[in-house]
Image (spheres, one colour):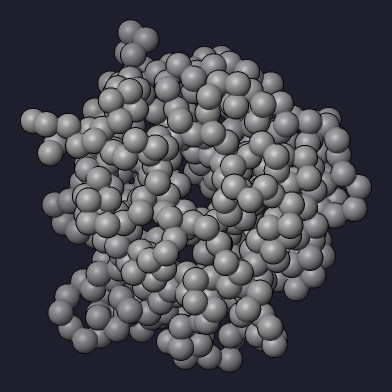
Length: 447
């Protein structure tokens, strides 16, 4: 079987997020984030787990960068902790927080690894949540100011910037469903948060443009999944269209086309947030790329309940991950094609893709064959997308190492490197050694 080679400049990477790996969330002058508060609230996370230690990356970053170098990573996507840099979310800057990220960036560059910075991966400063968080329109300028602070320090060395990670998740799951921080169940607040997050993205893009070198690339990261009707019934088709609109198009179209889908406004009706004059132009600031986080698809059935009157159903006989997500590699090809059709001029990156399986250490080894096969099949779909004309420039697996999986705590393992949380030992899984070979040959078998 021949090797499917990727373009010569293709960026093979891995991704992480600040609260999930760093630990020491209040160290050296940092302020508490909404996730620090949420995880310390009884009943919110599995086993009462918190990110207080996580992977201890805040203290072990040197060995982690050395591990990335040995792995052969071409790029590393990580997020900045907003309350590390601005403990109150605005106002006084914490120099120690910026120093930490500067040391990390310099070490990555010295190791030959391109840094991709995500400005927001869910750890909003708690002080800003006290003022309404993403539901307060003032956050547009707060986020813009924060982006400026970070870009002033790192803009000359970081070539790739993303503003927000998965705005659907932190607005809908955090403000409407209450399963993530800040743990609210308020549809009206959640939809305001959605609109303000997209406005904040546009504000940050405009400010970054004035600070970054001409070669600096700016994008945003969406979690996207194809949504297929559970049957050929008109009701199920309509339900799938509603989910597709609210989960995908309602976030992608404003950024790429300067408009909300008409169906979104009809579905939400009187709960739709106020859109001021000039808002859509601000949201649709020109960007350079779109980051796609893909894990699975939705199979959608009509229901009479819920604001979307739709629910996901299982695919009998399919393989599922420990998260209860169907393994569906064709969905990656489908969603890459869809995003490309929305903005043919933009580059794309797979900014997250991976799977949680039940990993166990035997004789110092983790034989995670399911994860390796999962990644293999998704890499093949990415190659197919490139061959069909999609300008895919890189692929960041989720995740570099096991970490704090939000409300699931430490019960789900996504990493290609196993973390023994008691000792903080890093143990390469079989998938890590395999990925090392993929990077070295810049391709995968299967053509």
